[in-house]
Image (cartoon, rainbow, N blue to C red; front, side, top):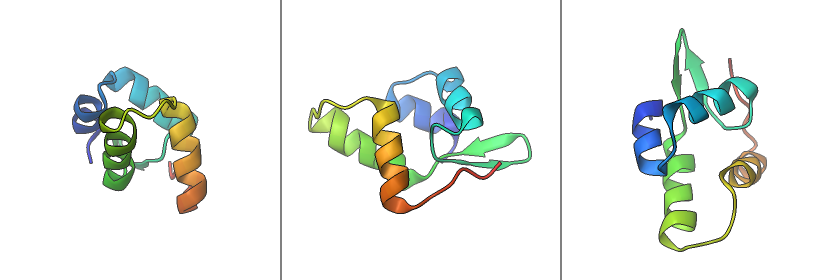
Length: 75
């Protein structure tokens, strides 16, 4: 999913997401100059944290999700 779409769903700024993607804090893939984030990651955060009200930071959720899904950031 595009970073713009993810930012809207996650209620985060695009700049925050781009920074985390470049630094490897969030799962994502770079295609040329564009970045994409895994739809399962974004929708999982929305479902687990925003809708259910779990108390976990976005960065911590991203770390746990990447470990569970064994994904690496591809730049």
